[in-house]
Length: 170
Image (cartoon, rainbow, N blue to C red; front, side, top):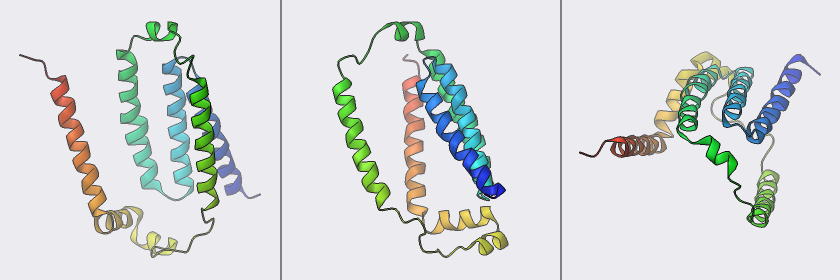
């Protein structure tokens, strides 16, 4: 086992463990802290894959902005009331059925995944010669321009909706 394989194994195991720790915590603040550790490990995995730009974006956007948003939402909730009320006691059969259906679909999808797909236009050498950010920019603004613009419009509508909802009625 090489050092890179060992480091990849560490990240894979820790991402799985941190995901489980995040969703099993009763205290939402503790769950958010485990999510922070999860995001940092995902960024480490990106660095291992020579995707430094994605690692930086992972830390800036997810570990920074999204986590702060989650913390604000948690602070706005009345957690004492939420923890004392028993919820979803009668919905276990529906949850188990949905989980089984999800596992069946996931297994059928995973079976169709190619482990070694055909190499694309951008080889490792081409990316190293051009740079990660230049390659991402070229692909994003040529091949994926329409989806990029659609996501931009959806985010704009979400921002306008948040401003309208937050605006005080006069």
